[in-house]
Length: 293
Ligand SMILES: [Zn+2]
Image (cartoon, rainbow, N blue to C red; front, side):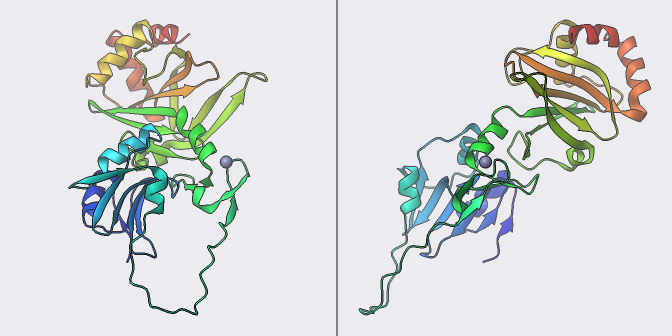
């Protein structure tokens, strides 16, 4: 069967119909026994299975994004709760041809493949495919990538869009693939070491210019927010406050968990208009800059 492409928001209908599909970091396949299984990130974590006429759900937790997939893709009807290992082992009972002389099939050796991140050899089933970079990485590298990503928030016409990105992957708050506007501005993300133990991530963007940059306390996911004028401006934007141009606010993790590198950016051609608007609306660049130091 041809796999259909769906967004995670729409994938539940594919699950209910036991259709094979490819979502963002999710997919569903029918195995050689005819068992239908839905996976989050890779074969290491099946979340739902339809086997012998019954739905099974994985009761284990893996990560925040996997829990999100579990609630987005939940099939309708009764679910039998099982562990990760149990759901992996589920097979459809098939009617077999009775062939007494047939040799029992040897289970195939798992194929070992190099992780594109750390070069370590892992079983092919344990690799996760990152749509953003096209790389296949091991669970360890994937965890590091997802744990403290950089965050770019785009404010436009009173609306807010969030993209989180690591070294290998970029995704929206819904766990879907990064939108085209992000692909258009993203250039490269690197880790800048200040000494053996300390450093921070630095992302380069195409066609964007920095208005204010520095450090803020906390992280956009935490309750803490940038200080003083920056808090006010952050709240103004998050409440849907209008600005005349598109504005980008970047948060990047550092080796110090209490400190986040932060930047406010806009398109080069919008810079003058934005600065003029900031100055006449009580958020001068000087005030914002001092809140970032
Ligand atoms: Zn790795």
